[in-house]
Length: 115
Image (tube, rainbow, N blue to C red; front, side, top):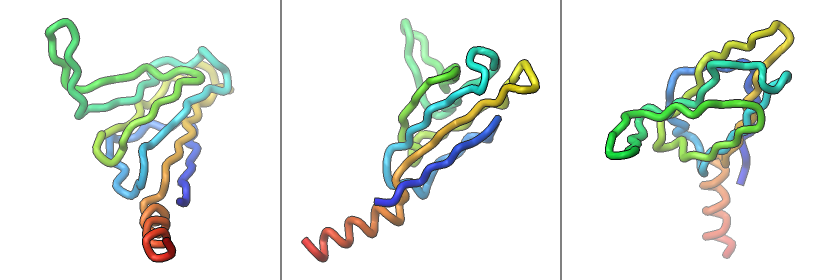
């Protein structure tokens, strides 16, 4: 199975689905200067959360150096907020990886044909 790996720098993006993925998505976020960034969140707007009897529509997970998250981007809408780096020499990186749907299909076909 082929793998998609992407590294973003200071990314803020609109929420979206990863329709071409063939697996669960995973990311780790890191900072060049750990602990400096503020207002950095991973947004899941179509996740419903119930806490102490109260329902919340959408989840925002605070990101910081070293946080890792896995989710199914094919069915869970997601995105990241634009960050406040709080110093010119700081940067935030997101390291993302998932199986590529084309590679996953090819692997399954090869297994079915070749046994």
